[in-house]
Image 1 (cartoon, one colour):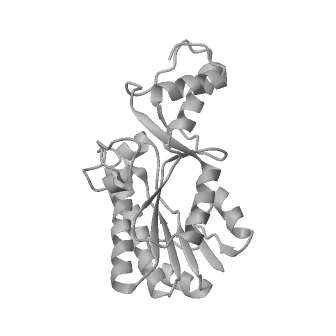
Image 2 (cartoon, helix red, strand yellow; image 1 turned 180 degrees about the vertical axis):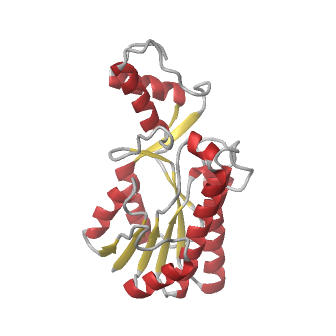
Length: 256
């Protein structure tokens, strides 16, 4: 089959694309090739490539600091990119559309481990809400297009990912790479302590990025349902315990 993987040069995409290329012809456009916020560009790109399947990993995304400083960009870019791409994929006759969501779409108060039936039981955590709700609307779109047009769009919700090729930039990294960098820097500078935001009691679920990539391939091949599906490990860890483990692995001996 011919597959287009938007966002395929990113963290998750760099692990997913090699798996897809084993059996399929795969296009991995960059934003300079096709700006997903420009409908005419998207329409033309799909017309030229004629994909059987579209996988959308494309996102403007970052950590807590990034979310606090750019909420409008997070909402606008993520909503617009997904809405345009899904609509134009339907119009182009794409056989299957795989949309990646985010666990930031879950309500602020959600029992752990997260279950799909809890997705609509409240408002997301305020810092993550613009990003999470923009992505959540793509689930609504996928279900609406399936109901009205019979369009086979599926929606996957990966938990927090980590692994090779992660983002270590201070202004946009997620928790595991951010903690690794904090401890590595502290060790190099002989800092007596490392300060971690929050109380350390909240828990998170993490999934190794290569496992997430395999899960997406399996869903692409085997899942054709309307309901959202979590991709996760099923295991929770507190931020305090996570920091302790990372500090020990880095070899940091100061105070946390």
